Image (tube, rainbow, N blue to C red; front, side, top):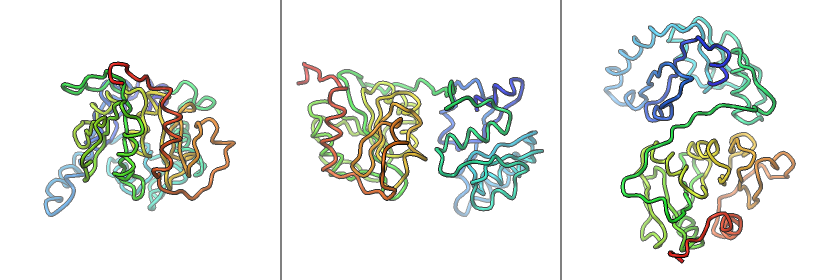
Length: 310
């Protein structure tokens, strides 16, 4: 969005966003207005009561240009309902959403998601430099957790994701904590399952943090380990001290967009800036207990061991 703002400094930019993610735009000077898509209200028998007023309000937006970065039927329909004069999208859009576009940015579907988004921003007038140099990505500072001390140093573990087969098992989570004892391991994320009898050095904050509190923890952590997820991408925009675990997803397409971050796939560890020259099997496998020692060897020197705790 920063590229679109730089190309059109006087434009009124409205971002249509799910209500649970709106805090990500707190303090973002590139966005003039936030328009909420209350997805959770459009389910069940009461959906028409909520949906119809939202549709009427959406028709009043009438933007000169709508950019569909999501590339799904739902997002294209929202652009159409907004009565946009022009709708731009990407060539790899799915679910028939391309039928709604007036112009299409040609993208390489094998390229990283951000590289594809940049092509759409370029179609809208954005000046894209080499390797997206100088990209502006304003992330809020976050909200500190009550009664949480960021000292001694801790490792942040985000082991949960919506996609099937992405999350780490409880056994692996516990073994991960044991491997780094006595260093604190703070476990975060949203999950239906908690961690029974967590190790002594494990602080289980599952389902206990807001998005802004999670951002604060990412900023405070000495290292972050995360499965392929939204929080992983937030971490990639804030720090190099990140390792992203990929089971069946391709890190070249959806991995951290940070050349100095690390990725794990199929038992292989490498930096993002080495992905292009690294041979990696397309098919993935789950992250197992046997993979933890390699992570320990990588991360342990980067996280100071507090003498008072040791």
